[in-house]
Image (cartoon, rainbow, N blue to C red; front, side, top):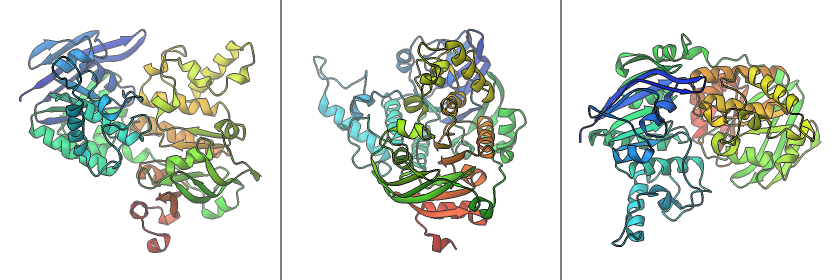
Length: 506
């Protein structure tokens, strides 16, 4: 199988917003092209044009040296092009098998679905990730309740099920743990040997250098560089992405000493918190502290945040500013000054079909009276957009028009409008580029300087090490180790994530 895909001088506008001005790439059979760029640079738009989701305004697509233009994803799929997008396209009410084979189910004579073949083919696909997913993941499992990593794997299998010649992986690793990422890369190596052409979009530099053969960099909708990855460095790529920034200066924050932290008020105290996936968690969060939650993905971090926010049934004690505060509903937590920024912004944090204005004000409409004082609401939302340096066309644009990093700013901004005392964040920088992360880190530092307390779960070890005052490492639903000061190192964090105890790290 031989295939080549070429995009030349691609342009796309949305009103006054230029998504792509002059974007180009080339990818050939048996190679991985890393498509790199800051959030808003146009990577996803270019991917959607190649996949037929978006129609280009200018330029040219060529497949096997023939000019093509796809009017729909179905048209692209018929030509052998499949994409795994950052925002999942699964139908929650359907099963794993039904999602994977939707629109191209194996049929019997007479047009009926061959359920036996459907199940057998689904089992074969699930076997590709055997050992990295739950044993309960079966063809008949409903997709809705699945965790984000398994939903992402179903999305990958859905794309592979059409046996594509060109496969675009748009932030496909963002929700996966290390084992799952390595298994995906093993599969990518096999797919290369089969002659597939693969476009790999990721903000994780270590992954780009591990799996990529060549790179193409987009900045502000324009291609600004391409080459062989073995002949370049991380800092050279980052400089192309964000015009001179270096990776080393992105995560930088001056930590308070242990004595300074101990002298501050305890903003939040959690004692013996128990919930599904959480087994007796106890810790304290001080005023102005940035406290990290670490450990391998799926060790109870997500459930801990939900339980504290009243979104997951729990037992135990919470104390906020010295007063009891165990919550059975998120509104109770909000009233006491807690805010939770979810990691799955598309499904948990935003109403994608609604405007940026509406998304900003979802938790705060009641503050603007009845009838609504729309002029005041727009003024407040506009001020928040400016403070977050939100790159947008206007407040009335759909939030789905924003890049991943800018969309995450809206998720955070809507909670900041409530002026929370404790801000809890569930892996908020997943799928966000280096430049957007730098802005986000400065925002967290500013909030801590203002006296707010931040509880940050991150799947990025470097982020935890470079940003947090302390890190609580979770393992099997409990806090296994607390790391601070000189003990907060990559080796200690990795060891604790794999089950090492506090005593073993001394």
